[in-house]
Image 1 (cartoon, rainbow, N blue to C red):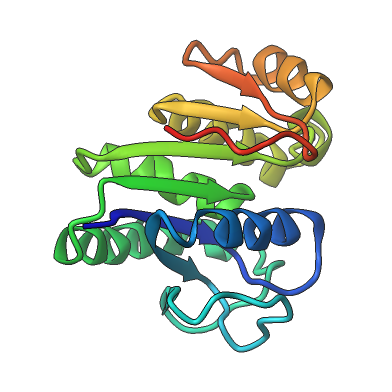
Image 2 (image 1 turned 180 degrees about the vertical axis):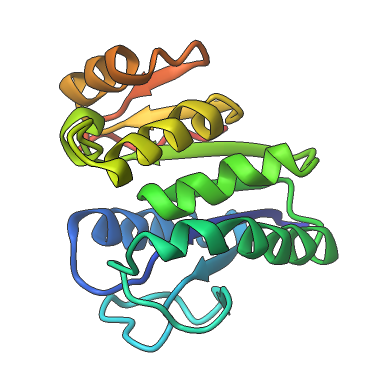
Length: 184
């Protein structure tokens, strides 16, 4: 029986994180039963194996859904928690901020599986203290990323920036985009 894994991302339109997810899925496909959970499944631009199960999280939303989306994330996390329980999925990988917040909410809401957050941006820049939204974003990063079993950054600068900006105390690991995949 294959191990099950859920991968959460905004969409599979073109982009660096999206390409990384597509490569990860193609690499893991023979060993894992993969469930791809996305905010927008209407515009999949990268090829996926036919065995991948795709799940739409709520109504389709764009990658730049705006501040109001932050208040809908707990409800989406509860929806995903039900999906994970129904499908008996013990491991979640998340990529990009909104999916990463959902991974943190999953743990907050009692998800017993492992969560691995993949941070692909520089937190100090992306969540500037000059705006209310930026300060709220930093608050969410600090509170929700800390619940993850592991936080992966794609550069040593990103790792240092994330730790310095929000003072995470959990495991931080840097895997540059060109590294081989590590199996957990």
